Length: 357
Image (cartoon, rainbow, N blue to C red; front, side, top):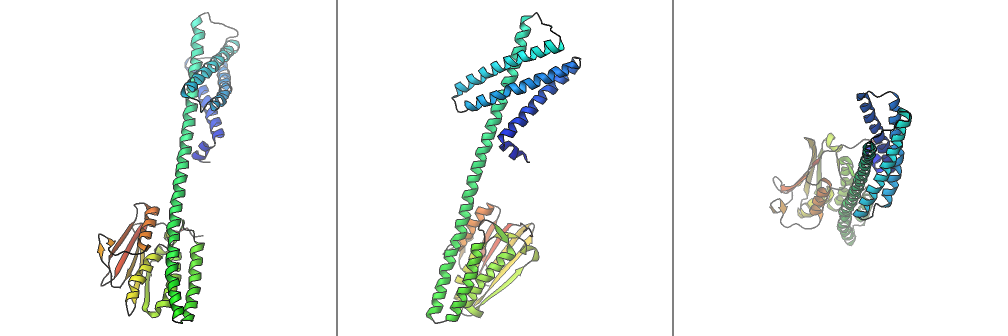
C-alpha cells in the first residue's frame, strides 16, 4: 500500500496517526521519567495516561466533523471549548493515575500545581485539535488536486480523441471520391479492391484506442493498408521506400500519426507527377529520441518560417496539435525542402520502448 492510498483512506489514516501520536507522547514521557529517575511503576502510569488521552480525543473527531462547515467563530469557540473540557477531564484522569497508583494516595498542598497540570493537558489537546484540522485540510487539498487532475486528464483525452477521429472523415471523403471516380470510368474491379482495402483500414482505426500509443511497427502496418488503397489509384506511379531500424520498430508513437503526412504527400506531390513519384519513410533512434522522416520528390511548395504558405486541409495542423497535446514542448515538427525536389517532414519525439506481451 502506497502513501497516497493510505492518505485517501481517511478512516485508516486517522487511526494510524492517532495511535502513532499517542505512542510518541508515551515515549517522550518515558524518556523524561528516565531523566528524573522515576521508579519503574511510573511507566505503567505513562501508558495509562496515553491510553486515556487516545480514548478521550476520539469523540473530538466526531464533534469537529459535525461543525466542519460552520462559521470561523463557531469553529473557534467549539474547538477551544471542547479542548478545554477534554483537557480538564484528561488532567483529572492523569492525577488519579499518578496519586493512586504511583504515590499511593498522596495529594499536593499547593493549589497552583492543580492548575498547572490542568493547563498542560489543555495545551496538549489543543495541539491535537490543531493537528486534526491541519491533516483534514491537507486531505481536502489533495482531494481537490486529484479532481482537478482528473478533469484535466479527461479534457486531454477528449481532445486527443477529437483530433484522431477528425482524420477518419477527412481520409474517408478523399477515398470515397476516388472510388466514385473509378466507378464512373467503369473500373469496377479496382473500385471493389479499393472498397475491400478501405474496409480493412477502417477496421484497424476503429480497433485502435486513439489515446494509447502503438509500436511503430504496428503503425507501419496501418500505413501499408492505406498505401494499398492508394496503389489501386496510382498503380506503378506510386513507389514507397521504407527504411526503419529494428530499434525504431519497437518505439511507441501516436496511432496514425504519419498517415496524414503520407496523404498530403500523395495528394500534393505524387498526384501532380505524370510519371508518378517516390515517398521515402525513415525512422531511427538517436540519443534516446525517435527520429521520423517522410519525404517526397514532388514539385514542392513554398515554405516560410517553417510553415507551408499555401497550406490546405487539416492533416499538418492536426498532426501538430496531437503532438502538442501528447508531448507538450518535448517534440519537434519541421518542414523543409527535399533534395533535389519535393517536401520533407521531420518528426522528433521521446523514445518509448513498447512492452512485449
